Length: 95
Image (cartoon, rainbow, N blue to C red; front, side, top):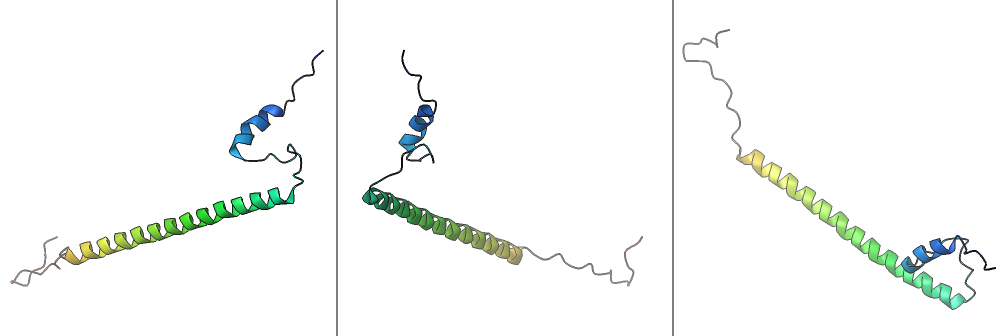
């Protein structure tokens, strides 16, 4: 009689191509050089993500500055509402 398939083998096949190890399912790596290589690869990815995060922050700040500048220009070019001046006869507005 054949042995039933490993129920976790399906999960391993899904996660394996993505390079995301499932803890407890993979045998521990015995080669220290493999671990060093994996650590170096992940640090490179981390540095790349941090760089992109910095660019994203700068872009957001730039857009916020542009928005503030446009608001300031709009406020400077919009004529202020003129205060109500009473008519020459000294009468105020009728109520």
